[in-house]
Image 1 (cartoon, rainbow, N blue to C red):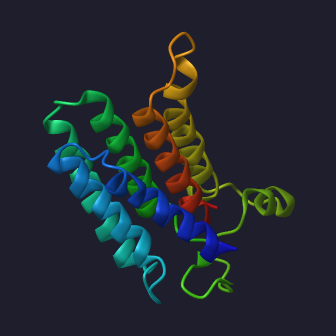
Image 2: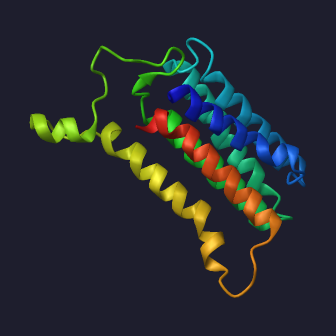
Length: 176
């Protein structure tokens, strides 16, 4: 199941590359970087701490680079939101599973929020921050689809939203 979710995220990151939505070099490079980050989750050791930190820092730098030249403001900001959400998950939320072999971690490093409440343990940032980032990311991705009620949603907005939703789905194993 985890492998399938990660593959969905990989497809979501690549979707704008194949449908011609990358109008600027910055957005094209950003989506290519997101594809690479999603692909590293399939490599054994790809979810290691140092890989997550490097990938998160690169994604944050790309988010700043994408928004530095705002010729197409809507595309740049939605791409920056995707980059930032992925970076936050990679930098501040430890993976709950070893994604390379789909076997749950046995060291108890991260437990679910429910398990913390049942055991009476204090809630840590890793237990609530990942789902919070996913919810905010979903709101940002879905807002353009629901905000334009009077005018029809264009092809560009639909592809961007589909890409964001698929990437969000792919990051669920990392944030859970």
